[in-house]
Length: 169
Image 1: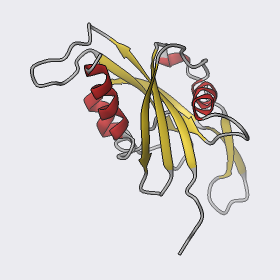
Image 2 (image 1 turned 60 degrees about the vertical axis):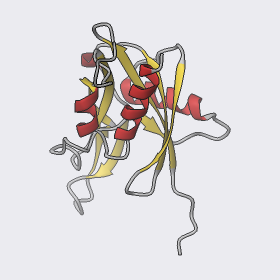
Image 3 (image 1 turned 90 degrees about the vertical axis):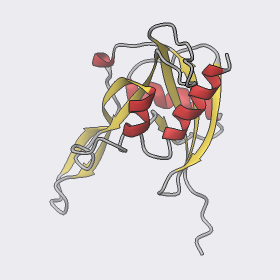
């Protein structure tokens, strides 16, 4: 049995209200969009549904979970994380075993200005050639239902939790 602890990432789900954000009779929250990120690199280039993510990453030594989420947002999106009231969205465990903890905060930015940090990998495989790719190749605003489809299936739970938290405000 593998006794290693799964990697634990911390992320920030930024949301914005687009037209009043009121609950309807069915309990669904309209007028809210979330910012999601598409992973960069050739392995993700043709993947869409279930491939997107909350901007997230691993903590540095002695870094708090929220500080990690804010730093990773800045690194992957190229903008400082929005300030404001933070909503704790808890943990999910992805199919890979990785645990992701997310926080939500209200904010807005122009996704056409997203510039991510980069990583290197051998590409094409077994070629010996190192290439550089953005960690996030694009970000987009989308409604809650669309986000549930595009996000990694485990992370879709964060959208449900955000919707519940905003519905109680």
